Amino acid sequence: MNKEMLKGTTEVMVLKMLAQEPMYGYGLIKKFDILSKGTFKFKEGTLYPILHSLEKNKLIESFWEISDGRKRKYYKITELGLKQYQVKEKEWQVFSQAINGILEI
Amino acid sequence: MNKEMLKGTTEVMVLKMLAQEPMYGYGLIKKFDILSKGTFKFKEGTLYPILHSLEKNKLIESFWEISDGRKRKYYKITELGLKQYQVKEKEWQVFSQAINGILEI
DNA sequence: TACTATGCATAGTAACACGAGGTATATCCC
DNA sequence: GGGATATACCTCGTGTTACTATGCATAGTA
Image 1 (cartoon, chains in turn red, blue, yellow, purple):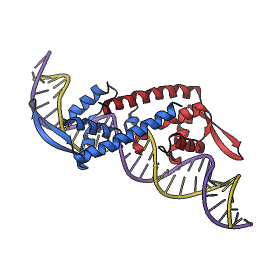
Image 2 (cartoon, rainbow over the protein chains, first blue to last red):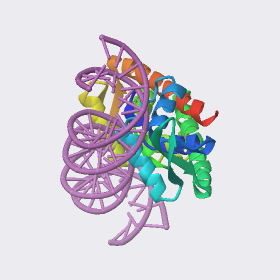
Image 3 (cartoon, rainbow over the protein chains, first blue to last red):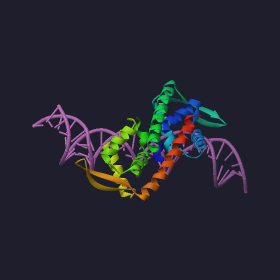
């Protein structure tokens, strides 16, 4: 996979996942792998900084929780995050349709 | 428009345009603007380096020509460029469908 | 003549994902 | 018990990419 294509789309996908249910970082990595059928292999060096950035911007919130006998840092989306998600999702639609418009002349 | 989403998709779009017909840089910028209905505003600082890079990698070839009383540097796609285009186009399809799969759960 | 659009080019900058490295704990098998 | 593996968190430095800003030149227009 051309990793450069990912740029700018990671945030919207993370927000989407957290809009479904609270999740922790490592779990997100595994889930992305499964949902994308291996197309995306999010690396920890990619995902964790994004989560910290989203939290800093109040789009998500974190809380520690013990589940399955393990300490995990869960993130949940905020109201602001939900709004931002809708904006970003629309951006993706406009963007991808514009590309398809050019590639399918 | 989130400029980051562009990353990795510019090359395939340039190759597609040049697969249609030989074009010169400035003309490509105008054509992208029209075809994408303003979604893409390719800047000269973006496009010219890409054209030079593609030429260096033998994916396109350049030739100077005078048309409309102006000296223009035209680029045409090579056989190698056509093959590369098909690879990149497939990559885009896989990529965008994977994103859509996640965003449309 | 001054301004705008056309047409080429590049040096420096910012944003982003990644590779590589670190720490710690739970589970499984020998 | 001990070692390997998977889980789970984190960060620093690097490379890639598109953009900003700038420069140069010419044709058309007011």
